[in-house]
Image 1 (cartoon, rainbow, N blue to C red):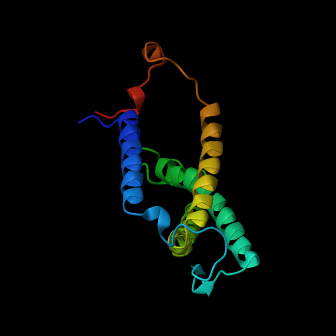
Image 2 (cartoon, rainbow, N blue to C red; image 1 turned 135 degrees about the vertical axis):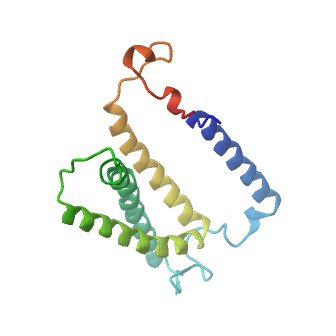
Length: 171
């Protein structure tokens, strides 16, 4: 079996479109979930978000939290995988105690973030859209920083650069 980022991306895209078609056919657009702004049914951790001030606080919190989460996922997680958990990597540049401290902070934050994330995802569509847009902006920013360090070559010339994994595939 070939695991390819191109194939996986296409499968994910088709599944997203299929999911949206199913949701719209089930009446998703007329559900209580598809609300915008404050209302009596919007709850965040049991608190009614029924004023624009409360709604704006939830949106600001959600925006900042998503930036922090995405930044951590795009930097801390790869550092842990590539430097700490990689058995081939024998040298670390941060002390073991400090490394454990950073990892524990990260996992504690992720645990807390999941509690708030569940509330956000179960609230209403406008809050979820804010999370998605913030996540896409942050992910694209961080990924562009990584891509700026790369050299792009065509598939025909990739062998000259000793590319080990063609098209991000694993056979």
